[in-house]
Amino acid sequence: MIAILKKGASDQSVSHLVSWIHKKGLDTHISRGKEETIIGLVGDTSRIDPFLLESMDIVDQVKRVSEPFKKANRKFHPEDTSVDCGHGVKIGAGHFQVIAGPCSVEGENLIRIARRVKKAGATMLRGGAFKPRTSPYAYQGMGAEGLDLLREAADELDMPIVTEIMDPRDVQLFLDKNIEVMQIGARNAQNFPLLKEVGKTNTPVLLKRGMSGTLDELLMAAEYIMSEGNENVILCERGIRTFETRTRNTFDLNAVPVLHHLSHLPVVADPSHATGYTRYVEPMALAATAAGADGLEIEVHDNPSKAWSDGAQALTPDQFDDTMRRIRAIREVICQETVQE
Image (tube, rainbow, N blue to C red; front, side):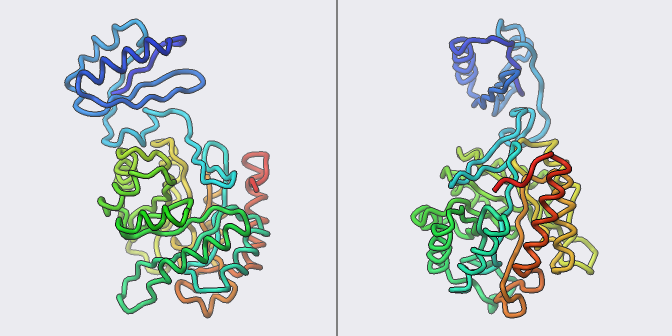
């Protein structure tokens, strides 16, 4: 349930209304926009008589919200959310960013790749220090040492880090290393203890859609994080598993406008994992940009044939340069502005 307040409602009257709602045993989520203020009622709303609520002086109208996700719902928060990722980099609400780097942190080549993607226009550095793999015998990542290499490269280039976290027990480690954005991968999209634990921090979370997850399930995963107090959530479409075998996954481009319709949270697209092949990454990156994505996550490696993981979908630095040029051209068309650097 949401209560849309009348224009000019004073802070004192809003505070009284919020206090009254809390006494009824419900939580509230207040969204103050340019045109209106909305109070979202979270909990057992059967305790509230909507007609009584609507009769109050400062309330303009009351609407019921049927979706189970509340804090992530655009009805609760009509204006787009901008997430501050540090280093002056924001995403969402008109801020477009490109996250680039290798699938896995491998060693000293990280800084070379990072310098190239930064020069090409990427604004955030990605790289996996902890790698969830289908086979227990596949490369699992460098762990804490990989985080140190990411930190060193990001500090030199003044870029936020985006890297995957897999275990709730590692949250403090990520905080100690000052990781700017914790990524929840597709395999952990419904790892509820992990979602709750990152929700107890204020660190931005890039939440990927599960391999067979619906959009509602993605939004409910975001709700798990936000319900613990962390509202710095970025949604990511990275392809879903279907019957099609010609690509690694099926890139659900529909997800970009649908998520924007349902939620105020920023939406990022990952064409690398979605397609699985270098030759398809650029066209789908351009398509996602044109569809209104707030950002892209693209894998880049200086020698993909020797990458320790997912080399088949990585762009070379030269290919990334060309892709960024085309991304900027798309952005100029749809927004009449260049990619923010």
